[in-house]
Length: 273
Image 1 (cartoon, rainbow, N blue to C red):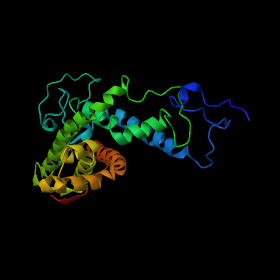
Image 2 (image 1 turned 120 degrees about the horizontal axis):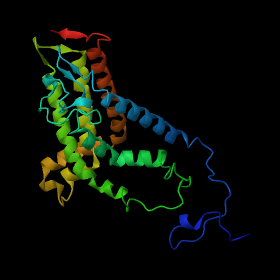
Image 3 (image 1 turned 120 degrees about the vertical axis):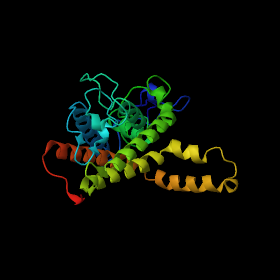
């Protein structure tokens, strides 16, 4: 029996004993690599689609029914269609500047620092670690104690921005019921409204929201309203991972539908007006 360990010194717990000398990278025989692979494909495809759409600078507004895709809301560059610019047009229309430049960076940072997404891309893109009982893909581990990962602690502040943006998306969905011909209702309204509902569910299921509502309370019995709100958010928080993926799907679906109608690929299915 030899005392030599196959585990590099940099991966040993500080002050801990040397691990068993096992030559195999992992003794797991299941398809542990499948989940990280699916995550890479899913997130990679969504990022590619969103990037292309953000810099297309067209097919984001349906004038007949006031449909505005969330990828371009609020539209604030001087290239934006006036009717779609509910908050004014005050940024230059350079192609490198997204038309929703006021909101997209905060939405990106909110999701990038989200507790679930951190787990997802740490395991899939960074292999840190790719799965339980599978060695880290890096020689050392410093956690979130260095730049830029130190900025992950700002997630609680990006939550406030995300809540404001959800209000803007809600306003867009409401305005879509008032077309130039008056009150109207179509498939696009259902899609916009469904997307807003899912965005709110994902936003308020955030761990930061749960802490804001119920954190630092010593006696729930003295705060019945906050306790009821905390139990509701806690129930959603259990589904935070599913909501994270669902909202990626609803955002892409909403944007594609608005783009298709705006481009004239097919007509909106109208129920009223």
